[in-house]
Image (tube, rainbow over all chains, first blue to last red; front, side, top):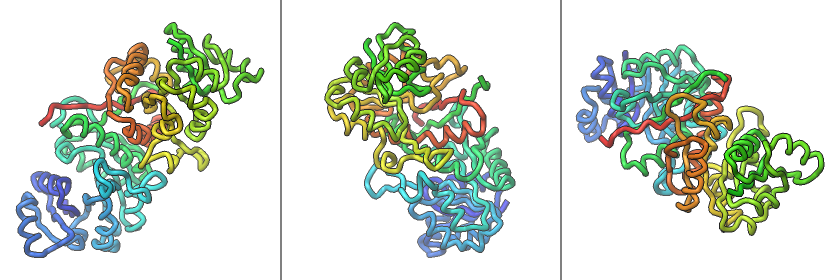
Length: 220
Length: 220
């Protein structure tokens, strides 16, 4: 599948590398696009993915993965060109975290609670088919859930059922067997809001090899 | 132990009944206090607990449990009298949910993200020893974790280690073996922020017999 990955941090490069390994035709995109320095750095990070600008990756992919800092996500959509995203599956992994006040970050107020970054991304690219998933865990677990023994979960939400199926297919290739479907995209208010507990646990444990599990019993 | 329970909703009455069953000396308090109608209703709900006003329960308890609607929590502290809460363990279970815009509720903006209801309660009763716990699950599971098979977790956070120990003792009486300590009270921003995913799951599943589990692996 042709996949564009927007963002060259730990999440973007981990995903690009894994997707290349799975045989996908991946373009990894940075804000700097095709500047020579960026291209050289990217080529090393990309695990065999092609590299390009946000706009080029948006044109390249049937599926676009948004994995940038929360405060850069809407600019990344603007740079990608909302028209190029029309009809495409747009998987948002970015969280609306604000690191400007130090660690742990707070949520960006205007992108949380009564909305979410995922919903803001949908508003910025109205014809894209936005799905939110994978944003509640460390990058290493996103692409390799078996690295953590025992049951743990990935969430998925979105307003387009077929787009959720496409994302569930990619999750399956990573090793996820039964994503927890939270329903419409507005449920991203919840998944993005799970970051503060994740960050508190990260601070207490000193590592990121943990994840949420939803233990579901029988209806009483 | 002498325990005051503030709030006569599902959470308050479930806790009061369970604590009475465990042999504690419980007073369950409603906003209406000792009005005759309230007293009669409370006597039926309280599972053998004494009943009274917020102020009377605050005076009665060595441990005070706050289990009211989020938008009524600070008024309940004011009615209890912050002076009466001085030095006491104050367990906040209330979540800063705003139901005024319909279901699912949103978080009350001024009591979330850059603060939490638990921190606001601490600010309103500065000499109380505030602990946040139990607010991430259904009342039935709070007092009887064995009702859900398999592993699942309760969080605890607070700035007073001895107060957290007192709460951990009560959790142990309910059947919780190893609470997940998230550190200082500001971690309540995280636990209170887990409500939106809980509410999304509740909507999808049609019941509340589920809970969060934190699956923690070895440090890589």
